[in-house]
Image (cartoon, rainbow, N blue to C red):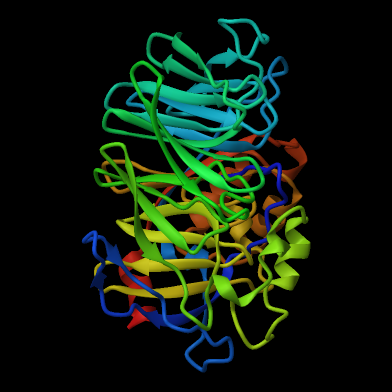
Length: 411
């Protein structure tokens, strides 16, 4: 998915180094919640290999979103799918755009102001497919909005008046979970999803780095469980029945959260932070969740602060770390880093990119490989939208990800 965060996202390329990691034995703590730790990651380990992301993608369809002179569609930050529509929330826009499944423009929901029944901007969204309700945050007005996508109408608006800015939301069961941070510590507040009223439950985390930087991808529904990677902490949680419980701990004594000065996360540009995470010992690779969690075929992709990802194959309970390299072909599928935004019931994954120069540079390289299995799809796109057409709208890609092939790397 393409998006530009209010915090500068790190460059992540498509040619990836991978280092095989095994998970430690599963333990059950006193609350009977599973805790799994990654073993130490050593960057010069000889098992590191190089893969190219395009070699793991097949059955690809490209959906360019319709260009119109009267509508400015900026890079997509998040999007959702209904049975009939594609909904796109764009960066720096107080709008949600609706397209049909072929990318043709249908409608839009616009922010109109700061009045009681209005909203000013959008910072995060969560779509509940079972009900067709879209929940989104108005960051400036500190509101949570309930929107019926099929009926095209706002159902409810609730004000947040406790001084905590909400950064990310996730819905599961009867509850809406919202991450906030006042720059001294963070918390997860629990609301009734139907009434949008605060339940009185807050889970407070005294670490100042909790949820820093704020990410719109902190929550991810996996099967029927809502997981949360808030960022700035080594723990991934799950949200159930109005509770927030620890599930997964990333890193160990050598590679985990305690191996750097935590102030480096606060009040710094991401590029500066990334360079300092490994300074205590350049031979270490520190594994600190950035606050984004994605899934593909039931496997996890945990975005890390240093631009890397942990890819966890849950079937064989092993993980690899996807590392940055010099190749830039990932711009064919993603704008900044590997972010599979959505999966449908048929096993197709979705991501977004955009028709900028970096995309067309990667497209040119692909068109030099006529034997590649994705060549026909990109060649057809290039016929319809060549570089000189100046097509710059967001592009949605629908494909299947070959997790079986990637599993061979782990084994």
